[in-house]
Image 1 (cartoon, one colour):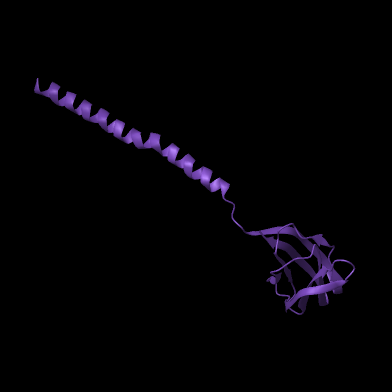
Image 2 (cartoon, rainbow, N blue to C red):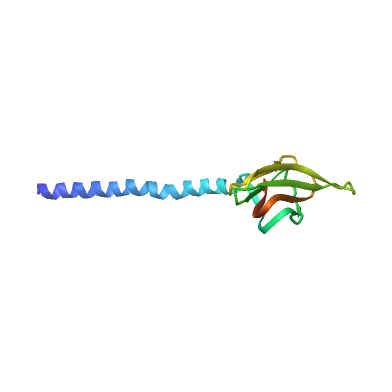
Length: 150
């Protein structure tokens, strides 16, 4: 008789424990869905690549095709690199002025051709048409990225 009451008590305890452990599992998906809806509505700013291209081995002065600045973007940059360790890469970021005002260099930079990329960045981009030009003293491949921050 005593064993029957002990096994009944253990069965009652086990069933209450299973309810306690099951309760948080039921509540968790509701809390998770609430968090995920808030995270999906907020967009984080970051760097976006507008163009990525590698220009074959060239020497001297050469440039890219033009591109349009996306609407609302104020920070743009050119990341470029070359290999060879025996020359330097000069990068000019150009923009086209409005109403026939010609073109102008917005920013320029110079670094060694060692495989590491350098950055030429403008922080108050206001014109719509841009392009980049490169200058090398020896024949190298140039890889570049056109990026904007939004």
